Structures are given as C-alpha cells and as structure tokens.
Length: 191
Image (cartoon, rainbow, N blue to C red; front, side, top):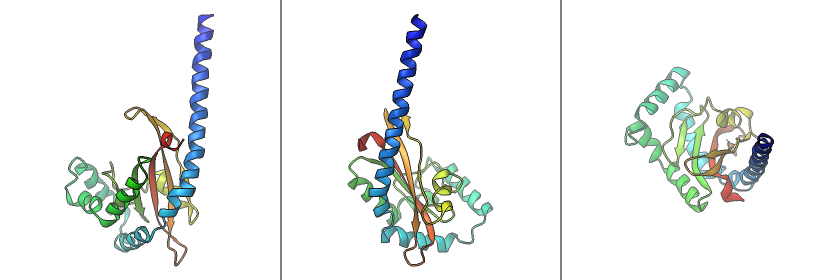
C-alpha cells in the first residue's frame, strides 16, 4: 500500500510539473509575440545584421568551424579579440539596454546572422556558431515567419524555470530573412 501512495504522489508531482511547463510555454509564446517581436525588428538589429552578413556571406563551413573552435578555446578569456569584438559591439550594448528594460525577465539575448554566427550578445556564449541549433534552424531556416519556443526547463542553479524564444529577423525592404534573435527568459517572472 505504501508503494502505491509513493507512486501516486510521484505521478501527481510529474503531472503538475508537466502542466506548469505547458503553461510556461504558452506564456513564453505570448511574450515572444507581444514583446520580443517588436524590438527584434529594430533598426539597430537590422542594420547590424546587414553589415555582418556582408562580411560573412562568403564564409564556408570550414571557416565557420575554425571561428567556432577559436571562440570555444578562448571562452574563459572574454578579452580575446574574437569574443571582445562581439561582446563590445554597439549591437551588444543595445541588447544589454533591452535586457535592462525587461526588469529581470530576460536572462540573455543572442542575435545571429544568416550563417548562425553571433552578431550581438548580452553575455559570453559557450560557442560562436548557433547555426547548428534549433534556435537558428527553426527561425532563420523556416523563412520570414520563423518562430521557435523551446521547452521550458528547470534550471537548478537559479531554481527557476527558463525557456528560450526565438524569432527570425526580416529585412524590411526585401522581406527576406537576414538573421534571428534568441531570448533566454525567466518563465516564472512572466506569470
């Protein structure tokens, strides 16, 4: 009988956690639609992506892999040129301002160019190339209407639920995708 009670309590806890994660996903989608989508199309982001895409347009996969390896090898030293150039860029300053205005709801922002390379970041990322991840593939790779709300996960270090929302950035002149924005959101702060 004790085993059944333990099983029932565990099942109840799992069901509540799954329902809470589903609620968070809906809240994150609303946040993406009402907040992130408005500033993700800002002139600052569009201009920075156009400029970076002009530089990286001819990068092949070998070049991208080499840059990503260099970034990963120096991630503990954010003063190295490859990281500092992105971290101290005016776009990154703009993103940190957006993050501050969000009042603790945003944990991080990453702007990725057409290749999936970091164009702007609010803090150092573990890698330079996001193009192999869902946040870029399901936004930029999906075309002009690309959006992606990732699963909400419990973050042990912060003891809170965190999720990523991502949206494609479109050139307002041509209507073509030019990059993507990913926002790490403290999902509980939105409830």
